[in-house]
Image 1: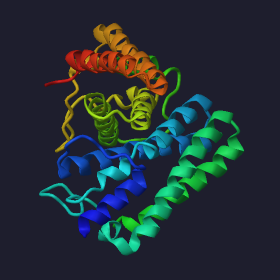
Image 2 (image 1 turned 180 degrees about the vertical axis):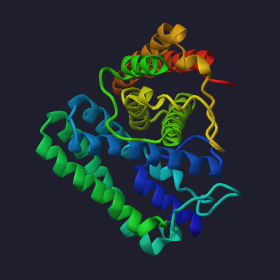
Image 3 (image 1 turned 90 degrees about the horizontal axis):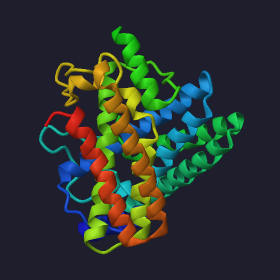
Image 4 (image 1 turned 30 degrees about the vertical axis):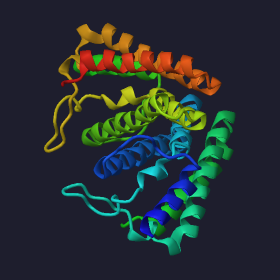
Length: 153
Length: 153
């Protein structure tokens, strides 16, 4: 049962596409953490631009990383075997992410993030600072929305 | 002198833009490693697609991550203070990356990667598998070109 649910979660998050790579669970955890970490740097750059001297090209580049990460199928990296710490490798994912009764919520928060991240890239390209500020807030809100549900403090 | 050189390296890699964030050296090392790690997952996905069932959308998404990472100004994360391990945090960067006599080579390999990564995203969008294979090889070659010069084994 667990496997079927996991497959459904993955297909929901990543479309109908499955990774064709054979990746160890610990490598999956590292990869997903790297994706979120690098995205965090890029969100931080956008924030710094909105609070300081605004450089349109830097904001576009950063927003493109956020959108590309959202579109990358990062949900595939939450496969069976990645629910818990593996040796010294810690994960802050909550067990709820892998539980069928939370699947609708997972799809909702993942979908929200995808939508707003892509909209952020679109709005960044316009260079409209006020609009970017609004959309940056919305995007950050969808990060928090997922963290609240599926990430330990 | 060191500081001036570093500033020149950064401006060369990242255009005239400097990060407006105050980031600790150890955080910079983590961020740059996360960028390369997540890119590695995406290069691996493209490779798996070229060797197995080709899914155009997955390849486009992965190539967009590679290009967005190349365009992100990741070179900014090689700032003074990030030349060496910091406590338990290891870096495999070679000291040469921070040395003025290697600056031309650094600009060359960084420029090669940027150019080929963006070309990979462009070619991926066409869905031409043979062309993507060629361009994937070129892009991987520029990764290796930089690693050979500036990354310890």
